[in-house]
Image (cartoon, rainbow, N blue to C red; front, side):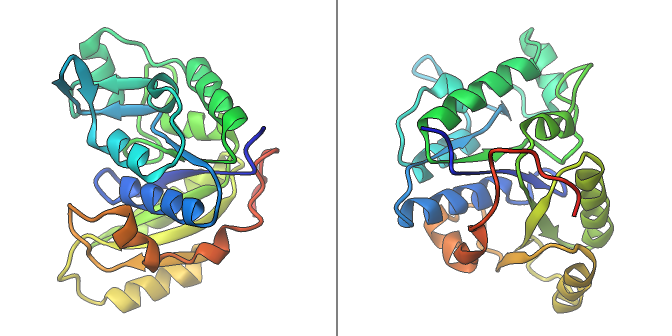
Length: 239
């Protein structure tokens, strides 16, 4: 088996809802009859429970998918500190290896029909002294879903991130607006500005669901039909 659908989920910043959107995409895929798995290549911020490092994002992805594949493949690097990955890795005495991450992804893709890969932080956050998340996304070559945290300043953040995605030769396949500032003024105007400028479909608007929202809470706000037709077997080119 090889994955029929896969995507890479990134965000305009940390804390903008990448995990919720990734889990919601998995939920939609499972509802569509696919076997699906989520991957969090690097998870920074974990607690030790019963001898196991536990990260909330990793747990949310695991709960949304429907395949019991090894945790070592789904979350190759779980780091203690809730900090930039290269900082957290250094504190743990770990070096994040792109080659290892790619190998883990390919093993998942060989066992699952669908794979949703959630990045860490923003698109260009460092993973090590030699590589960043953009390098990982470029090596994977998957269609990219951009989660935009809707708050003051999001227009520049979103447009710069989209520019960075396309500069790596990747396809910005769609974006999601997540209202993380509930009293944001001119929300409709800001969404309209991004619709006009991002040159990618708006997959949905999450209406400030809060920190405890589940994949089932978020999935009705996404357009499942827009997932069809995204290639996975070859690298995408600029639009």
